[in-house]
Image (tube, rainbow, N blue to C red; front, top):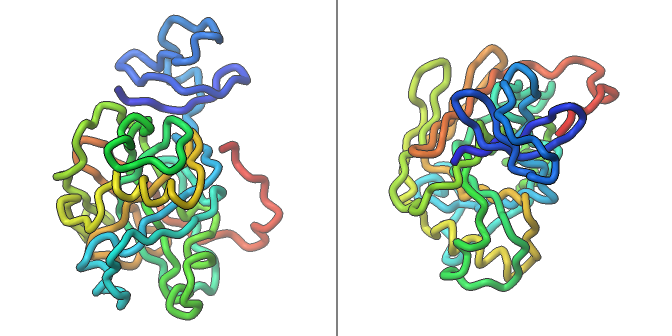
Length: 260
């Protein structure tokens, strides 16, 4: 099932995407018939309490950015306000230097969990989606930390939906296209740690809540994007995430934050 998050007549809810519209999954709202797409607003697929990202989960990617290959799962947090949906623009701030795409398979937590073993993780996953861990690479090299370089608003595109019927993530093609040209191509088979191992490791540190978003790492082949580009992140059997790249406007610090 392909699940989207929508706003309709003042209510925000998850719905099953069908050919003739969206079927509300919140039965308490009493919306039984498919709602035509033209009558609702598609929102980013999640509004997470936190975003947790796997670091250097592909050996070749660790080498290309000059980081050591970890011997256990490593992860960092990304600002929830970085989330945007498919079709929304990635805004490149002025003066940050090089900004890179990073295609990733992401998962959405479905049930609260803490200290769970890898073999119990599946029951706590709602589904999978595509993500782009956009990174200000020059800032990353300058800071030596991940908070600023990955935390800008719009630096976490996700979507276009949540795929709930994906029993196996062991052999999925992951790729990025910029302006129609393939720039990054990898496979989840090359992960150092599986998504279930990653979730288990994270749950030993922090409680995971429904709607939390976990990015499982990017393969080799990251590269720059600039205003005017179109970036497509494709994960096999999951979906295709499309975002234009624009320059952030001057004086944007007082702009209204879009509904998440």
